[in-house]
Length: 343
Ligand SMILES: Nc1nc2c(ncn2[C@@H]2O[C@H](COP(=O)(O)OP(=O)(O)OP(=O)(O)O)[C@@H](O)[C@H]2O)c(=O)[nH]1
Ligand SMILES: [Zn+2]
Image 1 (cartoon, protein in one colour):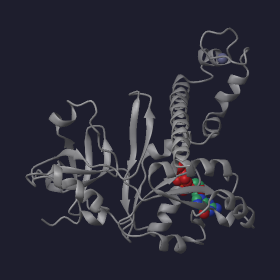
Image 2: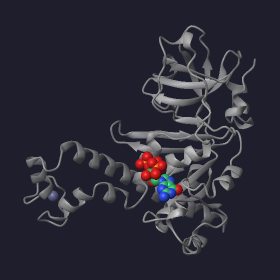
Image 3: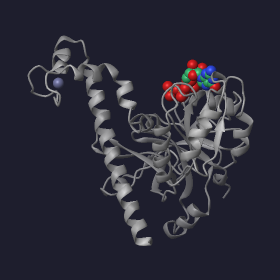
Image 4: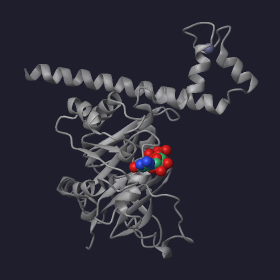
């Protein structure tokens, strides 16, 4: 069987898992490159294909693990149509978030080697935020690197370097500009084929520009969906797992962007500043914007000054942020217990 799945990061860690599952050898490993409700895009043998879940396995078991972007799965190939996904292999790293619509944990990205914590060197630079990103990066199981963008906008990077010294012990730090190209080659040298990276960083720090700079415009296209397998051409507006020319992969999903947003203590306030401001005008300081008299949010919703959509979105993200904070607290406690045991 020719399957160059190794190029996509399929290592012994995954290979060793298959032997026990794949008795009859009819299932082959593939990597998930996109998730669309029930349809998945997977890649193997250098070709992207569409796949569905094996119903009898996935829809009967409440504890079953669903595939996420970056996952390695075992599939039964179907030359006439969509392949069938049977198993999701154990992940070596992962990010998840709380989906308030389904009220459950949702996997955002899996099996990445590095988390690039991206911050720009202008007003976005916030050492506390970088520290927080570092904590969730370590927790994911992958190793972090700090990328400081837009060096062309500052005169002196020394003052930033000093601040980072305190928190970035042993973590590589890169200074670069996607505009002048400064520092891009150093980062390229750090990237290895068969490795996968994800980006954590607020909106506007230059993630997309960095992807373009790294790929040198020509993002190596993983082959299109086999035309004979799908009716017409499959057009994807953007890919969630892309491969650079040197063979390094980048996972960029909307979920990663949301994860970045609610993992910054000030992320919600900045993104929804007008709501925060209205809330400060309520009669009661601890107004829950529910039934209290003199609630400024309720009146703004009634007059249309604040749209219901935006308010719902805010509530949803706030729920997720709370969940993230709770999870982090639990993890800190767990780590403290482990440290106590060790000493
Ligand atoms: N001066 C300067 N501007 C940059 C640099 N990199 C990105 N920008 C600008 O910053 C803005 C945001 O860049 P993006 O690459 O879209 O940022 P992003 O992180 O992908 O943003 P979202 O898509 O909102 O998450 C754009 O106007 C870019 O042109 C840089 O190195 N130097
Ligand atoms: Zn209120």
